[in-house]
Amino acid sequence: MGLNPRIVAQTCAGAHAAARALPGSRGAEGPSTSLDRTPPAGGGATPANEAPVFATMLEMHMKIRLLLAALLVSVGFLAGAASTRTPRAERAGPLAPAPAAVPAAVAAARPAPAAPVQAPAAAAPGPDFTQVAARAVGAVTNISSLQVVRRRNSPFANDPFFQYFFGNDEFFGGRARPEQSLGSGVLISADGYMVTNNHVIGNDVEKVTVLLPDQRELPAEIVGVDEYTDLAVLKVEATGLPVLPWGDSSKLKVAEWVLAIGNPYQFSQTVTLGIVSALGRNVGMSIYEDFIQTDAAINPGNSGGALVNVRGELVGINTAIYSETGGYQGIGFAVPSNIARTVVDDIIRYGQVRRGSIGFIEVSPLTARVARQLGAPDPNGLLVSRMRRDSEAYRAGLRPGDIIVSFNGQPFTDTQHLQRAIADAPVGSTVRVGVIRDGRRQEIRIRVAQAGTKRR
Image 1 (cartoon, one colour):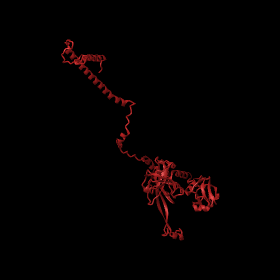
Image 2 (cartoon, helix red, strand yellow):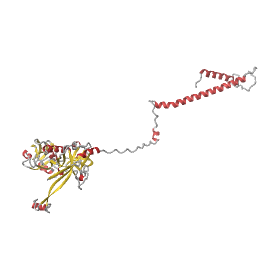
Image 3 (tube, one colour):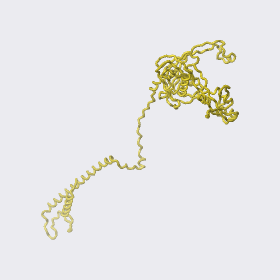
């Protein structure tokens, strides 16, 4: 509440005047009190209205004190209201002052706040291949091959001493008995073409039967085989069949997810899951090798089945396993789809694989000792140990004792790589073979002929 300046001034002036008139105040004439009834020196009478004036002055003094008390209460109330509003405004404002810095000693003495306890994160769900598997199993078939196997009746048939003196003549006669081979196949066209392994069909085949996923059993025709890659192509008379699209095996990465689909132990349309363990494996099983290694479970009966990537594409043909027990031990091998597709296209178009050849030559790895004897600077290369005189290589000038160090300008030291390089060379082209002979390096140009392929 406010005070009128004029009222305050008037009240103070009145109080000052009353103070001068109060009994007992010290004046120029000396002290006096209200109980002193003695007339002042020199005579004179005491005023008749002295008591009423004193009461009036006392009343005004009490009013002033009440007025000052009210003033102090009002000021305190206003200050308290202002102090309660200020922090709220500061918190709402965009430029609130930063909190005062805490001294380092005080901060060090304070206990560190406890770390918040976090709930354990939920485990991420694994990959879902249900849709991929559902599409892929419809294109994998069960293949049964009936072949005639001749067995000798001789009790010494496997005796090397007997064979050394008597050879393999059927002295005791022989007998033929049918044997059945079981495996898997992959449909690659809606009109009945499928790919499988050559060893699933076998030799001296009498009949091949295919069991389709819809449980139809149909006879199959052998279109052609390729012993270099252990692949074969079959054909059944049917239309509208489900197929697996070809994938690009060159894009596979180690640790990539794959599915192996086949018929192990006649359990049809079995799906197993694994990863790509390695690429470019050579295991000495066939002439032309570049296997995909996988840990997806592969067992007898899976041969010729599909290796499928996460997009549902055919990236390999399951072919072999490494095992000391005859069953799955975590190491399986598949022919890459890029190789299989080239083989299948050639067989369907030409009845055989058009593969390059320079004739029969036998090579072996070069040792440091032999390299020094032949004048080679290092043991990098392959030594030609034998060859046929009617081969393209011999006619071009290659000889036993030569050290092959390059093919079309590319160095190599592996027999498998040389065989693949020759096989992949276009038929009718000319290749450059670098050799070392008598310590001197030279280049021989050899014409590429077509390799002979067994056709059925």
